[in-house]
Image 1 (cartoon, rainbow, N blue to C red):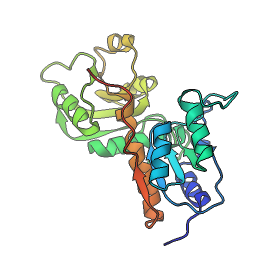
Image 2 (tube, helix red, strand yellow; image 1 turned 60 degrees about the vertical axis):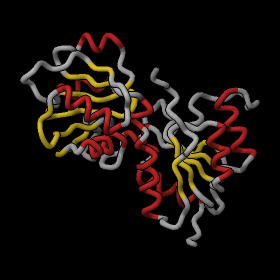
Image 3 (cartoon, one colour; image 1 turned 135 degrees about the vertical axis):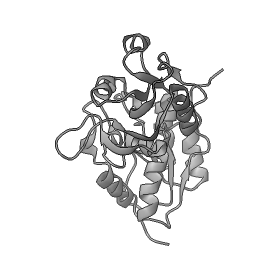
Image 4 (cartoon, rainbow, N blue to C red; image 1 turned 90 degrees about the horizontal axis):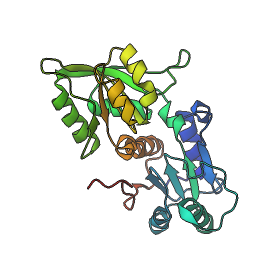
Length: 265
């Protein structure tokens, strides 16, 4: 089997999702552990929990790649209290390395989170919603549906594509109006609504929209708010595809113990 170091895997991720693409508030990068040793396998998740660390042990993976950083706020102590401290403690104890790519992956053109969402929807002529400079770095994406859809048809497409049992929507566009151009942003992307409108989008897909936005934009754009987890679950496939293409013999797995932390009742 091809001998791959953990540092080789991380270097690959950082070539594809450069850490300097991240937002100032973020903590993309190495979270826990050492990198100068052979990688026995990679486990992918959106958010790391102690049970996922245990799963990595069971699957003999010594590298976990997450989307959301395990360590986001500074830790003053590591006593095993709460999810973050427990996961850090367990990863160190089990000699497992943890790497996270958050807004670096969000802001990466062509293979970033919003671009993957656009691909899943079959959008064409995709462009960034918010770009920096000439290399298309930035949050969100905008593109065109292959054929116009009514608001109801579009919402059902979103729910089906991203596995969201519900969608929080602004009032549906009136009969006779269709959606062709779509803006979207994985995670909490309501700050890009105005950019979507400026780009000619009739609909905008994201998560975590505040109540007042559904009022403010009711007559301007069709808002479709799916769950945060549903909008970013695709990160596991993004990272796994990147690694498997470069290191096809390296064992890699989606976490089986990770579940959406929000239950719809």
